[in-house]
Length: 330
Ligand SMILES: *[C@@H]1O[C@H](CO)[C@@H](O)[C@H](O)[C@H]1NC(C)=O
Image (cartoon, rainbow, N blue to C red; front, side, top):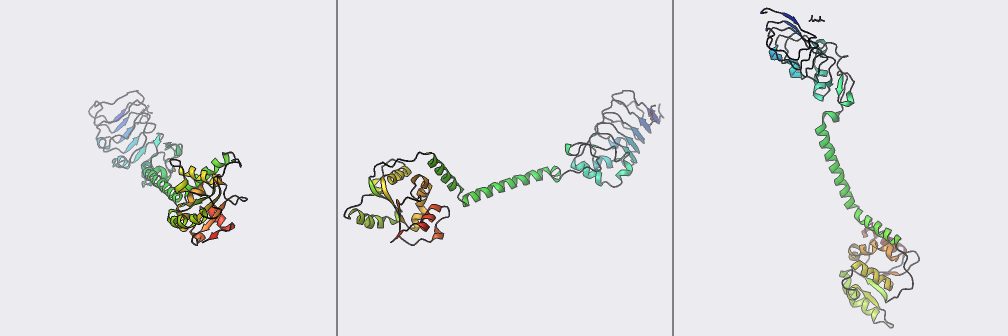
């Protein structure tokens, strides 16, 4: 009929509305059907009832520009935006309760701060319940609060990434500054030494002393000390790395062998030796047992005065023996 104004086809299980619905309608009730969208052009429509259907969004406002009341409760509406809501210029009542709302940050911030929303939404706030995210499931849309992390995920993730990178950088820098690698090697050497069986005491000595010195002090050692000791009466037999090390063997093995084959070990200490050579011995200190309480196999010769502050803190053995044992000063 051309002049039809009221049409009620609720509860008729229709799945779809077609253009045979007259454009003159002012009130249309299609609730309790199987509709999943609403796209009719009804310029005069004032009241629309679509509750208990399967609509996922609000109908398009430009098709029904004069709508005053819309009932869309118990559908599959998940949210609606400020723009969709605002495009119904004459809307006085909107019942969108009992839908499964996705309470996103945008939806919450729009609906909680929209002025006069309580006057437009019917059954507000008790019928408007969040379905997701899980942190606010079951809470009223009006009262639901999302954490800062949920609302600014990208920002939060970037911040966490930056923080993690900074912490790693800090750890690496600290590790470098505090010589962590050194201490790890030290612990490793110490563990190795603990597992090794104690060496027997009846092995052969080939030298009187093994001399450890820095290349910078080689002139003094080779031209003066070695000459004096090896030409003494009776002569001392010295082990020098340049002369007596077995070619092709690991340096550290050579050092260990030489120390084990010598009655004493002479350390010619200078600033340079402490800074560049000492680390070889300190690392292996537990193997040598050179500096144990009841062992006086180590003899220290100070070529130049060495301030204790200039000895790196990690060389604790050297600091200790310089404090507790007498040394020869040149
Ligand atoms: C449409 O018909 C149903 C069933 O009779 C009734 O409950 C409902 O109120 C009617 N809708 C309107 C808008 O009057």
